[in-house]
Length: 207
Image (tube, rainbow, N blue to C red):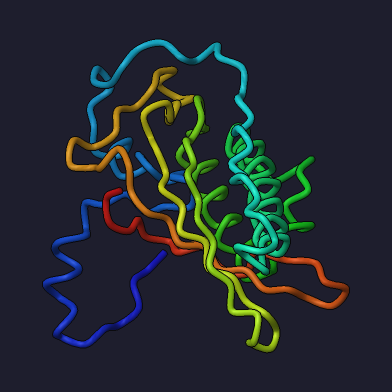
């Protein structure tokens, strides 16, 4: 994806972040590394592992007296969890075919996922292993429509990018943090259902 034009003041920030992994569940985690590494580098193994479904990351529900929005937070995390599981399926095959992503992600969020999947397919990479999650949600129920922001501490320790052309796992760049914050936006639509509307395409700070 080409970078949009930015003011001169952003050049230092771009230089600092240019080696950070673009993050939509790290589907493009090693696309830059794949194109830049020789065929004899990287870790071996992992090519025969079956896809792993992300574990549920819903947090324990607070009592109604301590958090009047506990049920809404639980609903947001349930949608995020379901989308994460469907996204993992898509990234294991570099295709959204056979998934239910459209049930949980808006067109804007889905377009970013589809872009990643297209680049993965072109590069001949798929996902092996799984992401760790530790999400926290904040609500803005007075907004119209009500909105939610999810800050997820993503863990890459068991995440792998498999190069189907070279038939091996590609290593993460050494400067890539193993744990970092991913920001996701959601809105409550008609009928009371929550939908993921945006996924920050860049990794956030370490966590």
